[in-house]
Length: 386
Image (cartoon, rainbow, N blue to C red; front, side, top):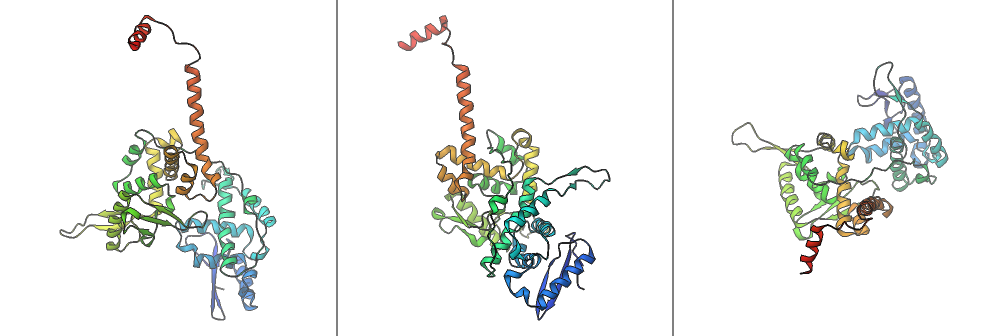
């Protein structure tokens, strides 16, 4: 048997060859004996040629193939792998992908909702149930791209799944925006090499993962017609954002510096060389580092407690609110954010409606009675009339 335990996973992995073809991935189980049984089953399926038919492929094999072709190259891949493994453990590693239906996933999702966990290794640690958001990410957002690729790229014939019906209701975060010195407070809590990224995010509303676009997707040759293509987005489609000339100039300079340093992102920090006469070393910034820096900045600036701003996504909310305030055009806000459905953009319009209601209520409280007549008012009125 060739099962082994990966350092970054609690599940056993398998890796074997059959007729010159390699099969490898996660077994989705935590005991060695169970993992060996999973591998025996897979070997038997491979020997019978069942794995050559994409429709008959087991979930574990499909997930392993998707991971090799797509998953391991995505941002935050380590966290994504953990979600996939939790999904496989619930649905079943040996489940054929053509047996996964809306009904079977309903059962699997309810099972995942009931899996209690602790936040501490102490024996008397309190038990928690996963949030609906966590369940959605583990069970739907992990499985859906695997089945989509099996259908579109591997030719599998699979049942249609009603993903929207399966998705649990999540509490929507109330959109917030920076006001006054809020943004300056955030910038003061991070090192200068994050500043350009923060300014860019608050203007264009990119998700944090979208900010780490490859240099090839940035077109800044003509500053008046510059743009950036965002891939690997939440909805799976590409999204193009036009850039203002001043931002194009900033990104062009960064792109040139990144190319010279042989890194594939415009976001980097420069570390001065200790050797006299040698240029500074250019180090690429990473997604995880950005996420941590933004979370800490929101907490230390007091915006987490005051406005509920928890991290980098607050910059996307700010951008949406600003363009909606400035243009009063919901379609423009939708185009900037890249929402496939305008219902997603309506969240920001509802937030602005709340501001209007507060303003009306304030006016109502301040103007129910006629102004009091005083000698000072009378004199001012006479002067105004000339």
